[in-house]
Image 1 (tube, rainbow over the protein chains, first blue to last red):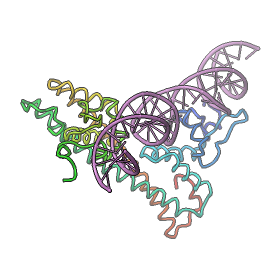
Image 2 (image 1 turned 60 degrees about the vertical axis):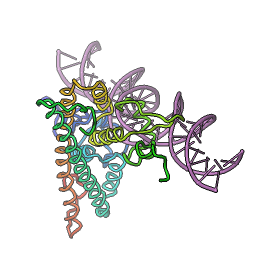
Image 3 (image 1 turned 180 degrees about the horizontal axis):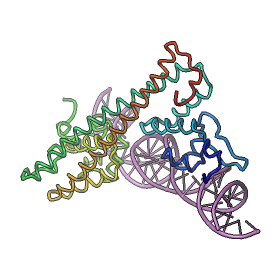
Length: 140
Length: 140
DNA sequence: CTACGATCTAGAGTAAGGTCTAGATCAAGT
DNA sequence: ACTTGATCTAGACCTTACTCTAGATCGTAG
């Protein structure tokens, strides 16, 4: 083992960055913004040590962000969790509302996709031997 | 008819804003940024008059933007169209690359959705009579 | 002990995509 | 003519979400 025993239990900011895909800058930023459930532990020297619970929470954050949840909502969610049991209903509402937004977004993207596909088809057809003059015309 | 005959053929910026969902500010901004295929016509008094082709193009812009195409790409696309026939292959590549990005985005969102759904399920179950103490635990 | 890379803090800077303001002008109803 | 609302330009400003910098410190390999 090249690392200390503690390393088996906790990770440095760089290791967490690797595992979550967030930059070390982003990790510090998230912490400042109050997006973490509890304060990250520190070594005697002041370096952050993340537990695997911290990492799990961050991985959820990543998914929520990736699906478009604003940092403000994520912060709200973190606050609810930080307050402990008793507000599960509100957490549920928050997540469920977000899920609905994700659904709507997927639907919208699928509509866009079909418009784009149609447009792609127009050009493909043209290139496959078409002749239509007014191709610049957005409707063609 | 309360409007002049010309109104049947062209629209004011406000009318275009209504039809496209873009703000009048955004319409002027898009024009400045070179996102339109050709310069918008003006009345003798300097007001913009949009043709239905302008509107059609804007509606496509809206779909491309809505699906996440950056303004820079949209500008590139507008330039290709502005140059006229002869570059259809490049237009096709641009659109098709974008479509692939949209597909990837939809996939990613669907993955996020399932993570969120699982998390929602955890809370719903808990509220429906659960007891698990460590609910704050991100994995629970 | 010395290097050297990783981390630390505070705070400035960046990129994208608009949004808003001020002050002037236009156009239409009365 | 007068009022009112829409539009005009140029340019400043805004929000979100980071990203980067400077200058200091930590910690580990040699």
